Amino acid sequence: MTACDRAAHAFRTVFDAEPDGLWCAPGRVNLIGEHVDYAGGLCLPMALSQVTAVAVRRRDDGRLRLHSEGFDPVDIDPGTGRVDGWGAYVAGVVWALDPPGFTGVDIAVVSEVPVGAGLSSSAALEAAVALALAELCGLPTDDAGRDALAAVCVCAENDYVGAPTGGMDQQIALRGRGGYALLLDCADGSVDHIPVDLARHGLTLLVVDTGTGHRLVDGRYGERRTAVEDAVSRLSVRSLRDLHAPEDVDSLDDPVLRRRARHVVTEIARVQDAVARLRAGDIRDLGPLLDASHRSLRDDFEVSCLELDTAVDAARSAGALGARMVGGGFGGSVIALCESSRVAQIEGAVTAAAGRHDLPRPRFLHAVPSPGARRC
Ligand code: ADP
Ligand code: MG
Image 1: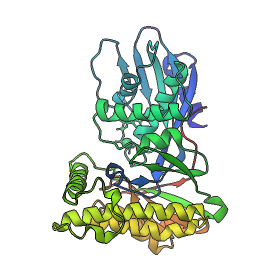
Image 2: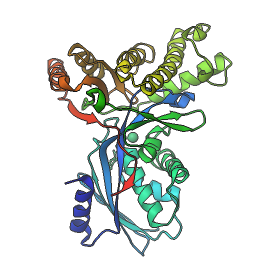
Image 3: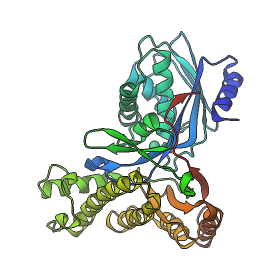
Image 4: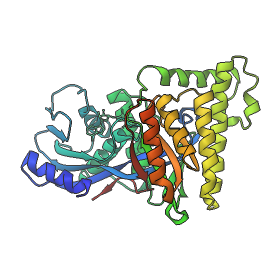
């Protein structure tokens, strides 16, 4: 059964009624361009085939009743103040979108996106709800409409949930295209679609969920953002995007700031390189760029950890063409570009390496560039 079928089934079971419609939105991995969004950089996420599905039915009493497998049910009366917990991701979208004529909904959620693994289950949930409400309330859902919905989801997550998020997750969840990654220019918000034809080249993009969660909440994300801002002001540039060579950061006296800035400058150059190679159809050439991205995140930006390094090293040793940590760091997931014929062997090597270090057993999924949020 698809996630949408399961959401419809859950809806009938929990609310004893037929939903008005079914919508879904994907999780994502970022091919390359990590920790550069808040520096006005470039990133290259692609939507996964794994989705979060919602079955939705309008109410007429202003209530918001939410059900999601494995989470506590939520029931919000119109007069209730802010909600906490997972319901905030949905209530936040309702609050930020403020759809015309909205009089409450029942929603059943079913997700195939691992939660808290750095694959953006939060934006998948927000985007599915946002598209559902937009369609039910007659708001536009063309490219410009989706761009506006992505901004609504960012607002929900930043200002209602209270989680820092740059906007990449929401853009790809709403604007992904099957067979393409999304080149997102974080300086001006413009996007471009870049072909990623893994299957034609006999390649698989393996995602390793290390099972350690990502741990952004303890201030280290904020420290990295502050370091980037410091570097910008000490170098007297508008943004690190204005620098093009690693030597351009050498004038920073502070060795830590120098490393942080060097990561941003070199990572943006790697994204440009990756886009050129994808456009030329040289997809195997992404391998060395993924490796270089990981080294930069590990050594210059210092956001990797034992779980991520272990998975990356094991995948490389078992024959991956390239591998890197993805997401904010300190846990979460890794991607490895693999010949499809070697995937089973690489998965085995990654699992064995985790076992040797007494780490949680990793989980695997295969990333197929997929469409963004849609009705199902
Ligand atoms: P991720 O990397 O998966 O986006 P986040 O910490 O940003 O991690 O978001 C995870 C949170 O989003 C969960 O703790 C939960 O509150 C909410 N969430 C995501 N998916 C679901 C779901 N299917 N059902 C209920 N809540 C969800
Ligand atoms: Mg998230």
